[in-house]
Length: 198
Image (cartoon, rainbow, N blue to C red; front, side, top):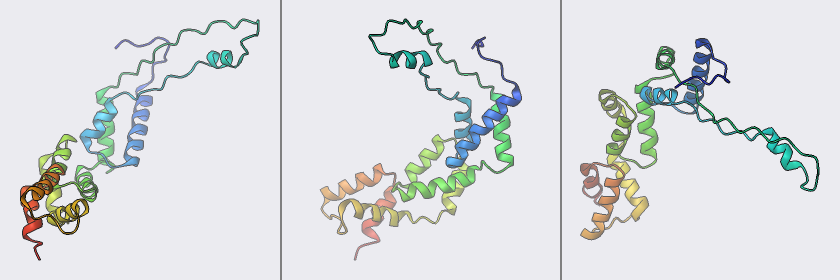
C-alpha cells in the first residue's frame, strides 16, 4: 500500500506506542489468547468518517440567505496505516514478558465463563481452537477445571424443559438435540437420566 502524502509518516516508536495502547485497551476489557490479540493488532482500526466542518456551517444557514458558501472540498477516503507485523510481534513479546497475555489463564477464564453461560465442553474446546489456543493448553485447562459437566447438562436441561425431564422417547430426543447443540458430549447427556434417576 502506498503512503498517503497528506499524512505524516510516524516513527517506529510512535507506531509501537499506538500498538501498545491498543493492546492494553483490548486486554483491559477481557483476557485474549495470543493469536486473537495478534489478529486484532494486525488489523488496522476502522476510523469513522468525520463530517466536514463546512457541511455543518452550511446546514446551519437559512435557505433564503443570499451569501454563497464556497463548496466543501471532496472528502478524502481514509486509508489506514499499514501495520508492520514485526512491530506487532514486539508488542506480543512485551505482553507475554509482563504476563498481560497468558494462554493458560485465558483458557481457564474462558472455560469458566462459557460454562456459566450454559455451553458444554465440546463447544468450548472448538471455540478455544478457533482462538488459536494450543491443544495441550486446552487439555490442561479442562483437566484443571472444577466444572461438573454432567451437573451442568442436567441444570441446563431442567431450566429449558422443567424439573421433571421428559421420559418419552420423542421428548427425550429433543432434550438430547438441545444439549448436543450446546456442546455437551453424549456421555454427559446420557448421564442426566442415568445418574439423576430418583
